[in-house]
Length: 127
Image 1 (cartoon, rainbow, N blue to C red):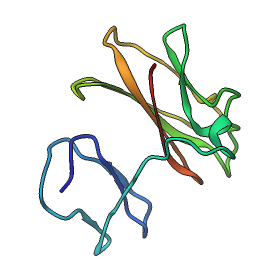
Image 2: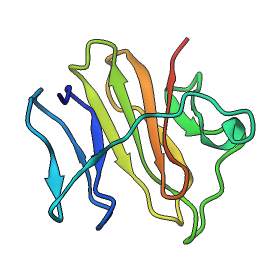
Image 3: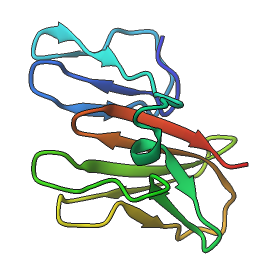
């Protein structure tokens, strides 16, 4: 069963989808079930470069030291989500951009997610 804002990835073509409405069906792409993306919450080896960080100036940056951005290894998107999951902001990134997202909304975002093209989905909560 998929829940609102869950992310799934096709292991054949790389398509990533986000669920908007909860449902019981199986998500399929390229003739195969899509893989649910379980977010990493922390990892001692990679935490410095992959965990989203809420900054005091209303931004989210990836890593306490910014994640490197190269054609081979980069952050594809950053997402900010309110605790009730009713407000979402997302920024898609190119390898040439810094992995920083300025929050546009005055809503209180308490969850941040990012997707690294090599190391997958990472999540952090504000606090």
